[in-house]
Image (cartoon, rainbow over all chains, first blue to last red):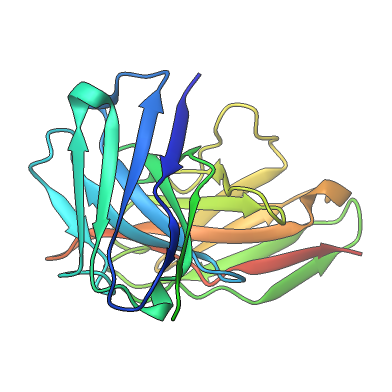
Length: 118
Length: 112
């Protein structure tokens, strides 16, 4: 069974940093590209970032480019999102989601809440 | 990476059909065969119900169908059931210099 478990969320002040993690199991992690998707309270999902199977290709939404960095550690079956210079508008539940060459699949974790507030 | 445009709401009586539109551009919906649809019930994680415009994942009833014409994709829910009341979001691959994905603005479907 595919399982994705996010962690690392919490309350942080504007301008602060957080590092999210996603532990994957139930599939060969190194065979899949991965995504981060977020959903602000009462809003729809917003794609945040993508990383290819090899990690060579990474892409970001314009709203986070230059502030967030996606990475992966295949030896630990883990996906990461380093978030710097956080803003109030980054407040959301952050999900990791498996990719399938052209679309975000239905394999999402349960999410981790990031709140940016003073 | 502007959000795809969906109507805020749609409704129908049990047994009826409802169709939701999703309008993008030639750089996303109209340019690639990678439109998907998610269903989300309150407090739950979005569930994939359509991928690659019209394909259904295993376990999704055939009451859900997808199509595309030009820059607009559509989701039709036939034979509406009470449990279909939820938020629905389309999503598309985005090409160009900064590839990625984009989601729609969302449609609340109410079963009357």
